[in-house]
Length: 93
Image 1 (spheres, rainbow, N blue to C red):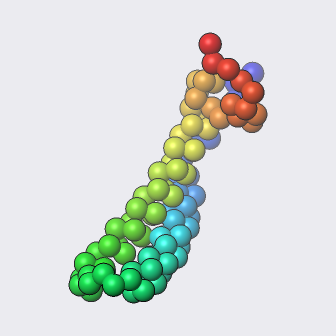
Image 2 (image 1 turned 90 degrees about the vertical axis):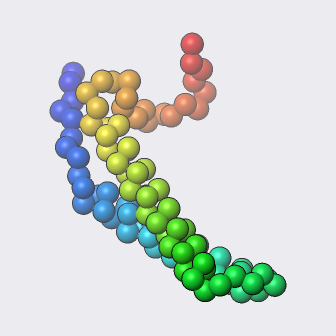
């Protein structure tokens, strides 16, 4: 029985990117608190770029995970689809 592959939904990827941005902002706040309580002398411009990199990395992570999930579910080949049981207790031969 063939399942019709679902189309790519960019709106879900956008939501995943926004959630990743939220996670990145929280990580940046934690990093800011951590850096301010250390004796390190870092210029504000470098801190700004560091926070930008952390937030951008989280956005990229969230959007790439959601994109790969959708592409895996929409693949016509059965081998690329995600299994419900996972790899727990299964051995590859």
